[in-house]
Image (cartoon, rainbow, N blue to C red; front, side):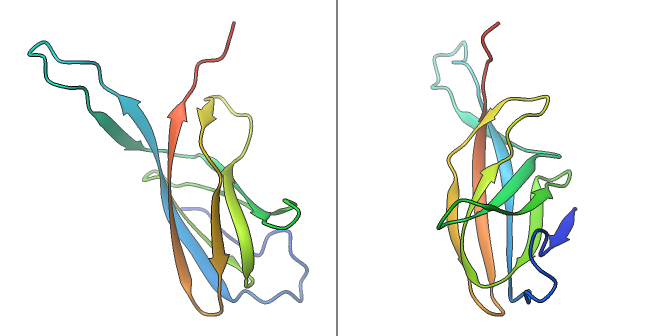
Length: 121
């Protein structure tokens, strides 16, 4: 697991809380031959790059990469943030940014599901 503590923050900014979570890629299964309904499955999003943005002005605060189980953990100063996928990379993924708040000496858990997309040729 990659752990980045206070990346992008000044040396005097104290780490007062933690955000942790897991990213999973949704993969829709097709309908089965017996007519049963299709079912969404989730797999860990390994080595997915995430960006932490300030909620106010959306400036980048830190980056973190998920481990082989799609998990991440990052120490941050108290405040309001957005978690989103970093743009680019070999696989195109789509997700909605997740808002979260860090408070002193607390751990916030954020789960995010992502969907693979097809790029036009």
